[in-house]
Length: 101
Image (cartoon, rainbow, N blue to C red; front, top):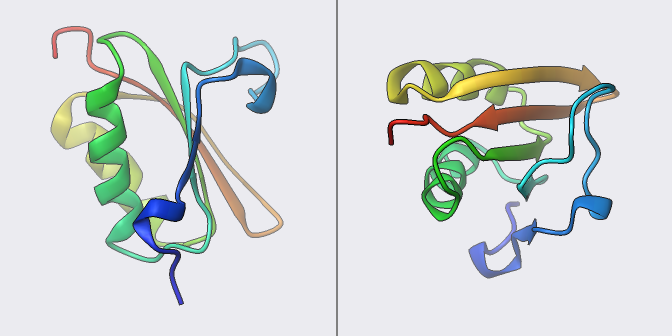
């Protein structure tokens, strides 16, 4: 069962976000754990509108379909996928909003 949309956690506090080694903290974090396709991509689409061009969005998800969906989202909408990893069933992505958006 998925979370209600009003329960989705987002954060703009850099100290609450985890970043891949050598990368700065993301500008916004989307906690999509427990959501299933198509909800994570729908939430990314909404949250990416909230950040400025060139800023970053970290997505944390548990849905395996995000491995396919998030890279395609970035490709089709010209956002940059900076980092992608899977550790113990937790999928983490770092996206940079298209600077020309």
